[in-house]
Image (tube, rainbow, N blue to C red; front, side, top):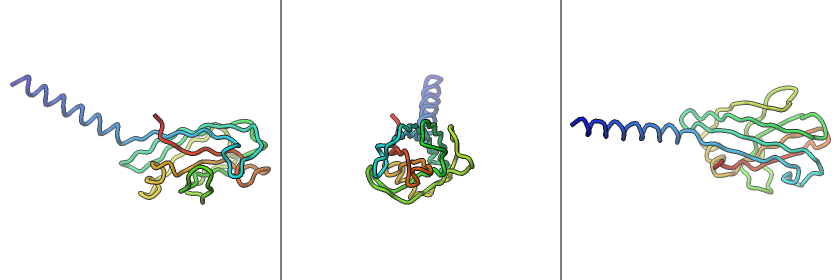
Length: 143
């Protein structure tokens, strides 16, 4: 009898743990000038890491960047679009000035979540010299 209760408690604990883990999806992107459309000539680089909580719909992100041609004048998450395709902004990065590192949160709609999970979002940083974007990275689920 005690063994059955212990087994049942273990199964429940594992199920709850798996559910909690499944509620958070990690994402990443490498930001580079060659990913812009059209590609840019810049030594700027950056990285993006993010998580999506599928229960609360909260999207948390962290971006680091360096070696841009000048100060960042705007930064956005764009979609839906695959690599090599431009799309409208979905989530703007707020703040002035925008400097590395950038941390933020946004609440996503179900459609935005689906596009993000399907790899149809990208992130880019805009500078005065490159108003259409200087570095960009397609956002993918992190392994």
